[in-house]
Length: 286
Image (cartoon, rainbow, N blue to C red; front, side, top):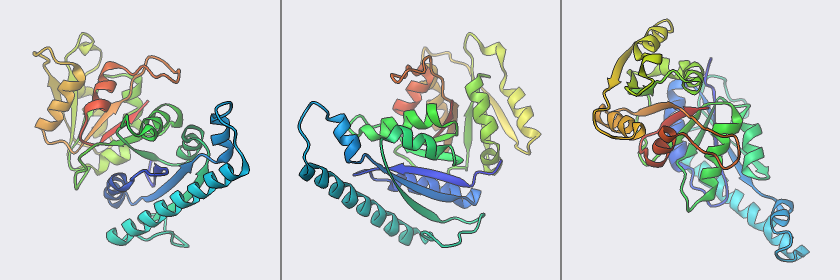
């Protein structure tokens, strides 16, 4: 499977530069194009959300529309400026299938339904690590992980110059981790180094890192198997992040586990710990 379409969702007041950097550094290796999707609620969505709170007149509707247009123009200008700095073609009329370029689209609506549909016609969704002060970030991550059905790359504070220099795969034999590996073979094949880490927990004997390394070899991927002893009473997620830092990993690949499909997602402990604390990019799938 080729990874040719990388989706970067954004919205009013959202700085996408760090995610664009990550997408660009991946796209150069994967020969992919970067699609930036600007998502903002239209007047009808704002009115529905404010129903019963305050009366809305045509002046209010016009102000909302004007605000969205200005935010979209600012976002598009920022993308043009980024493309200029990085020498990435912007909206070429006939973009080749195996070259890096950037496109811009605008969508009216809430992030959940828009990103769900847009993400399903892309290969990878690039989102920020959730920031409680920016609700868009948490909503985008939840939607990308649990509604899209494609791998999600969560970008933290650090964006390595080469995201594929050393990919560390956290393996536990779960359905989520299996899906992630299956959907990410093309990306792992491009990695300079791959390490498969398996934490020694109470279910350790159910799956072995060496077995996954053997499978990856059939796909031309040479991976090193590592077992985390878990001698210290650390949460598994914390131990995995510490091992990634110790080994100089440029990206962590992790199956996203959840106990519930309700909107108030109850993330598994490992996934929650990684999402809340990871500084390096994290590739996830559910």
